[in-house]
Length: 419
Ligand code: UD1
Image (cartoon, rainbow, N blue to C red; front, side, top):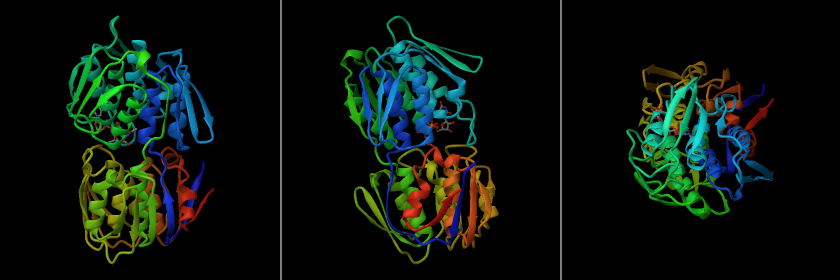
């Protein structure tokens, strides 16, 4: 099993370009199921999650071909409507095939994604929304069995009890081929939802308001959908991770290839801690700073502080000159990085969903283990700031969502090896 070996403390310099966002690419890939015409997704990141979803789509009959970084999908015929446990269990985002399959084929059998390390993550909001659109849903033997009447899904007024990202995406896609208009109220507003809306519109769907809390979708006939070539937005979470890498090592680096407005809440918080930035529309230059103060952060749905940057922020807080408080309000068990950071010298007290971080820790290298994607990114950041050689094991978690992490950090001057 691969490990990362990082020699710290690191000094970074130069420029890094982030990849298209994993969380935009995955729903866009599942949206290909709606469209019988070929679709080219440009410059796709080489990530384990993208490969896992490609395998799942292929198991449903979608043909795909890789041409360097582009992937061409052809969902001319759907051969199976069964998303099997063996493929779904590897990645929760697989549940996003449910809406498109139901819309196009009028039936679907999708394995329940089950729990995952960061929380139980139910799918009740997805299922309730689909029921409002006329789906009949039965859960049996670990599978969701869903079907529609002979007329297929019908447009509905759906009010989400919580702005779930995945549920908003599943319902938006389902509504593209439904009869009539669907309104999703209290929709998630994450930039990846806006991107999915833009992709759907580019292939002939009629979606209005994606990225806002009310989304309206006019159902269209499948014949109205057309071929499209599309590149997803830059990865705001990857960008935030590199920004924190620059700050925690007090280095000057440029992070580019993303819309800086997509991480305004993160930038505001980092600047109030004392970080110094030069911000343009699609890049940020991190400048050297004097001292970093503690933070008081609550994670929240967009435009609030993203849960996907919580672990990375906690590492920075360990180096601040004052103490910090971080509350995780999206997932119930997203502090798995805490014990590993403590092994590196961090002083963190965890109480339920609240973490109190005493600043001014002198982090030291230790053998540590990845537990989930963003927790692993936090360990890499800690290794950059720590004195000595940190060995990080189970790096397959990082491969799920950070393209070429070791090469990108090495390009910034970090002494990092993958063994
Ligand atoms: C997506 C992102 C993930 C990010 C999360 C929150 C992808 C592939 N993943 O995950 O990186 O951390 O948004 O920004 O885009 N919930 C329910 N019932 C449901 C659905 C969700 O109770 O039917 C709960 C979840 O358990 C969780 C919270 O709502 O506590 C947020 O989940 P959701 O917004 O759906 O996140 P995901 O789409 O799974």
